[in-house]
Length: 280
Image (tube, rainbow, N blue to C red; front, side, top):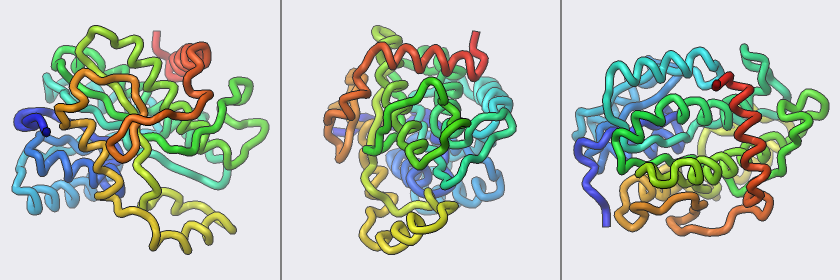
């Protein structure tokens, strides 16, 4: 059973392609007021117009943000707060994957910056709006690929490997669980999901054998619309009203990796993240 999404405000990151776009379309089709968080405004406007045309929902807006920049995230959060006084659903979807170490302008490894620190900071900056809009929901995209974190080298400055992506996805799960503890009794729920293996532009910058394998396997991957079904379900289903701190796949709560349940690691990541994004 789906709750009414009319007059419910939903912010979706990574909304100009892949899973983010598909999630935004799914929410718009249910009648939600959807804000597309995107770096490229021109592309965002094209996607917004397309969603309006296909769903008949005119309440589709754009919020410009570069998730690789802490300053841009802070500006976007401020702009959101000035424009809207409600936020019922926040979907942290945007992610990147690289085969080499790339630094952001803030000096962070790009995957850790975009995949973890960006949703950590954006969520923090919008928490009061979410609380004031309760009951509200936070939904974090993650992956079944979850690698244990190396707290001595979170930014992989000493030993970069392809495990870095999996570490950021572990961070998404740890963040979800710790945030759910901190939001108990607030009316704000937080859950994460693995969408399955989906045909998206994620991995477009990969090189070598891994890129070849991804290219060969693409025909067997899920469509973005199919992969987004669980996120739309978590945003709109009456069945998960009040459910928090869970990891979902195929609309079912399942167990995440064993290491993701270590509460000491959850707290350690939280504290490290606060310092990195300069939250006092």
